[in-house]
Image 1 (cartoon, rainbow, N blue to C red):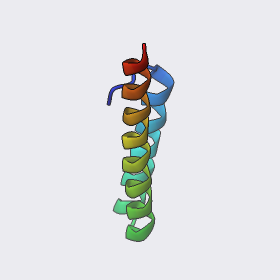
Image 2: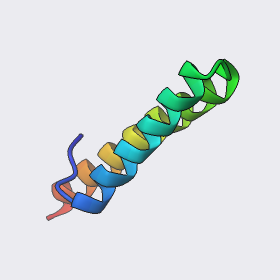
Image 3: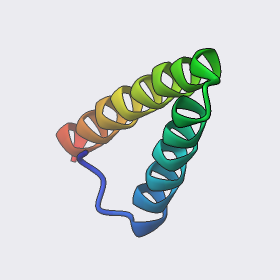
Length: 56
């Protein structure tokens, strides 16, 4: 991940922990939804970060 913000990293750790919880408890669809959402958020964050750095 390109962000150096501790709060963004903490958010993604919590998101991945929730994904692991849902996966291990047998609720695979919710785990898959969280995984897809987390991957999309990560990609968007990297895109916005790289665009903001290129404008400077």
